[in-house]
Length: 142
Image 1 (cartoon, rainbow, N blue to C red):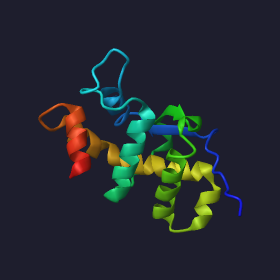
Image 2 (image 1 turned 90 degrees about the vertical axis):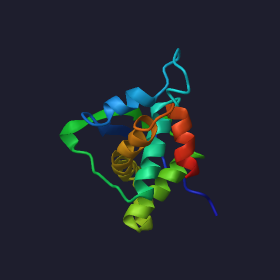
Image 3 (image 1 turned 60 degrees about the vertical axis):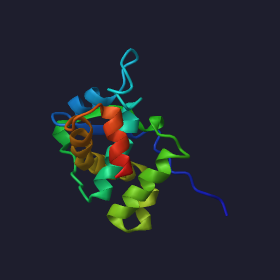
């Protein structure tokens, strides 16, 4: 049986321009910055954590088409690690395997989960005493 690959390479990934863009800048590492204060190496890494956290807590917030900002392209996702997670998040929302045949819809659903989860990430990492990296570890262990 041949495994079908979900191709998200050409899909553009967006976040809420007003609410989320600043959070991505606050938590994603810049080359000269300290990892303890900027715990995510890429915007994609932060997006994946926010999407998973949004799904875990059932916080889906669809992006308004006029108020979105592109943060990266689908080619940034790793086919072996990220794309299966995105597919699982889409299935969790839709409860229908047909969703897995639509890469754009898979990413749109992940955007909704990430939009719902990004504020939880911000609150846990920046709204608590301590350095963001250590707060991230504590959040994941709880």
